[in-house]
View 1 (cartoon, rainbow, N blue to C red):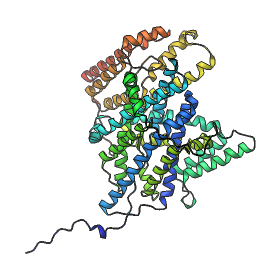
View 2 (view 1 turned 180 degrees about the horizontal axis):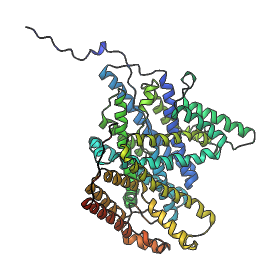
View 3 (view 1 turned 60 degrees about the horizontal axis):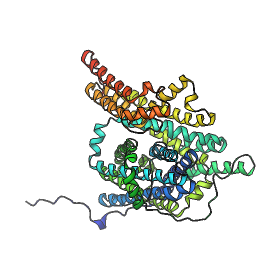
View 4 (view 1 turned 60 degrees about the vertical axis):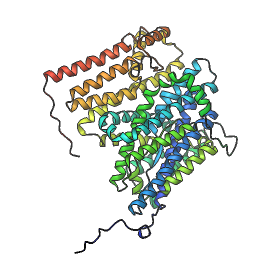
Length: 554
C-alpha cells in the first residue's frame, strides 16, 4: 500500500505576491513620521530652550545620527516584513513600526544631556565645548544602551519574567504622565487656540477612534488645523510667528562620525560617563520589555515576528545611531495593531525611514523646527503619554494597580525639582538664604527625585511582590535599593544626582552649604530606611497571615 506524501509548503511561484504598498500605508506613514519628527522637535526644544545648548550644535551634531538610527531600524523592519510574507505566503503582513523612544527623549535630556551640559558649564567650559562634552556623554550612553539591548536579545523572555511588569510599566507610566503628557502640555497651552484645536483632532481620532472622511491621516489633519490657526493669528497680529532663527540655507548636509574624537574623550572621562548608566540602562531595559510586548501584540493580529530578532534590531539601530552621533535610542512602537487596522503593509516603514533619514542628514529638519509650531505638534506626545498609561494598566494584573500608581510618585518629586529649578534663579535668592523649612523641603524633594526612574521600578516591583505574598523577594528588592541608595544611584541628595561613595557625597554637600538641610537625606539615612523596610517585611511575613492571591483571568 502506498502512502501519500504529506503536502509541503507551496512552491514560491504559486505563492501570492506580497502587496507591500496599500492605501493604508499613507495614513500610517503620516502617523509614524510625525511621531518621529515630534520627538526630534521635542529633543531640540528642550536642549536649546531648556538648557541653553547652541542651536546649530544640536541640529548639526545630534539630529543627524538620531535620524540615522530611525532610518536603519525601519529599513530592517521593512525587510523583515518582506521575509515574513514570503515565508508564510501571505499578502497582508504589516511591518513592525520603529521610532525614537519618547520616554528616553525626556530621560536623556533631563537626566543625562542637560545635567552633563550644566556641569561642564560650571567647570568653566564655553557653551560650544560644554555641548560637545554633553554630546559625547550622550553618545556613550547610546552605545551602552545598544550593546545592552544586543546582549539581552537572546534572554529577553527571561528578563520579562524576572522584572515584575508593575514595576517596569509603572516607571514608564510615571514618565508618561508627568513628563510626556504634562511638560508638552505647557507648550500646547502656551498657544491654546491653535494647540487645543490640534489636540482635539488627536483625541477625537486617535484616543476616541473617530474616523475621518476618506481615511484622511489624523496627525496630518491635526497639524494642518493647528497650523492654519497658528499662522492665521500670526498674520492677524494676534500671535507669534515662526519659532527660532531662520535657517541660512535650504539644505545643510551633515552626517558626523565622532568615534575617533569620542574615544579620546572617553578614555579621559569614562568615570563621569559611567555615572549616567543608572539612568540609561533602565531606559534601555524598558524598551526591551516594550519590544517583547510589541512583538506579542503583532503576533495577536497575525504577524508572528521573532522576539529576539525584534529586540536585536532595536539594539543594532540604537548602536548605529550612536556611531553617527545620535543621542536618543530607537525602539519598536506599540502601534502595530493600529497600523495593521489602517491597512498598512511595509511601504509606511520604508517611507518613514527614507523621510526621517533625509530630513535629518540633509538639514531639512532645520526648516521643520523653524516653521512647525510646537503647540500643534506636541499633542501627539500627549496622546502617547495617555496611550502608554492605558497600556500599562491594561497589561498589568488588576491586583497590581496600586503598584503601578506607587511607581508614579517619584516622578512627581522630579517634576517639583524642575519647577524649583525654574523659579529659584528668577527669584534671585541662593539656597543658603532660604528659610530652614524651605531648604529642608527642597533637600527632601531632591533626594526623592534622584534616580527616579530606578526608584519607580523598585517601588512598583516591591509592592507587586508584596501583594503576591513574596516576602523574601520583596526584602531582596529592598536590600538592592539600600545598596543603590548607599552610592547615590537613587535618592542622591546632590542636585547633580552624581553617583559616588557616601563620604564623598557628604563632603560635597558640606562644600555646597546643604549639609544641614540634607542631614536626614544622606545616603546613610536612605540605605538604613530600605534595610528597615526589609526587616519589617520579613517580620510581617513571620508573624502575619499571607494574603490570598487571586490570579487574574483576563
